[in-house]
Amino acid sequence: MKTKKITKAIFPVAGLGTRFLPATKSIPKEIMTLVDRPLIQYAIDEARAAGIKEFIFVTSRGKSALEDYFDYAPELESELRKKGKTDLLDILKDTNMDSGAIAYVRQNRPMGLGHAVWCARRLIGNEPFAVLLPDDVIAAERPCLQQMIEMYAETGGCMVAAMEVPMSKTSSYGILDIAEDQGSIVRVKGMVEKPAAGEAPSNLAVIGRYILTPKVLSNLNRMKQGAGGEIQLTDAIAEEADGKSGVFGLRFRGQRYDCGSKIGFLQATVAFGLSRPDLGGEFETFLHELMAMQKAAQ
Ligand code: G1P
Picture 1 (cartoon, rainbow, N blue to C red):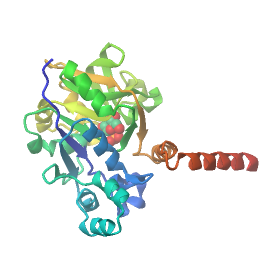
Picture 2: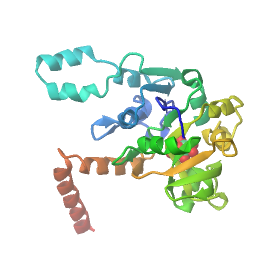
Picture 3: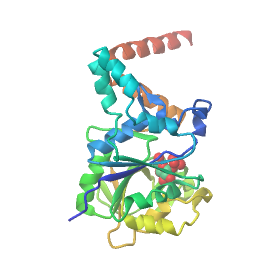
Picture 4: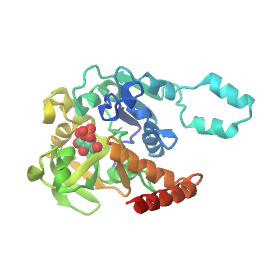
């Protein structure tokens, strides 16, 4: 199938991050660090690896630290250069975005994920695009968005990342109503945002990676309120399920961490710490000792 190349991605980062108060009183949630890199860096790296060239952030008040993070830091960089710290300069390279590669739009009222994505409509125009929710950190051999873009080249239409969750947890996710299950890929006939456990059409949940057609943006123009009184991206995508090109869910290969929750953030911190060649060994020894001490104290 001939599909248009995906080069633009939207990163909705306007949320208040109240689950991480008091930390988020003065720093955006997306700047909180997993080991030594802010959450947002993981999403940016994943997007870059999948061929994204234009990065659109939907922000709100109090997020200026994010804009600074992706800018050049002339004083810091010249200081490091003077001292010959090329390794640190290399680390900073990943944070620098070329002029024009990054754009910010403001969501002036918290009206939901669908509304946040809609705020970027003029920067997207008439082409398919990706959406990445930085709260969902996905450790994978092949980056999740890349897996999706490869599959999208075969299916066209809209595509969401999908993962089985316990039935008791469906009320935390967008849930897929499956028309045809082909294993790694499913064709979707509907989607429900955060259904109660007994009302969910399946336990296949949407994880925060999307490839969307511009049609979804025109669906969002109609701005219908959905679950929780918010304008839901899930509803605007679901409208495409009956359309010509359809909606698909990809059971991606990888481990997803819900860094929008404290426990998920802790789990990700441990997993990423353990997988780091420079830290993993010492950290593992520490964790073993800590567990042994806790057992002994019981
Ligand atoms: C959002 C989406 C939901 C999706 C989830 C994945 O919900 O609305 O459909 O399943 O992200 O993390 P949120 O977690 O922002 O409430």
